[in-house]
Image (cartoon, rainbow, N blue to C red):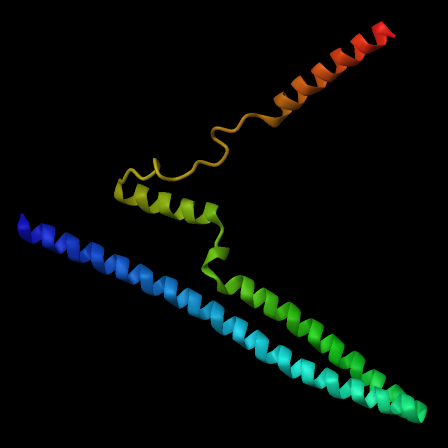
Length: 156
């Protein structure tokens, strides 16, 4: 019996260690994504700075062709920046472990518990099992308001 207890303790310790490493890996992925975003934004910032300087010099000299070329460059950089920002937002949203829908996690946990005949439903929240129907509450509020309106009309 002692051997089984030691084995169980080791298994639990290893499982906890594994989960901690998974959490750390997820956090590191999120940090890498944020650093990548920051590096790209710095490159874009430098490009925008050079474009603004070119536009300033073109405006100072009054060269319309150069102004047009600079504005085209500016618009192109701006579109590229929007696309990159949108892509990075999507990548960062998908890189964190907190973005996993809770209902899917609960469903998977329940499925595994059912497969092995375990009772874990006590710890899992049930979706809208205890919820009070909203329509009933709205109807009660509406009836109360109608009654109060009728009383006010009767008085005045």
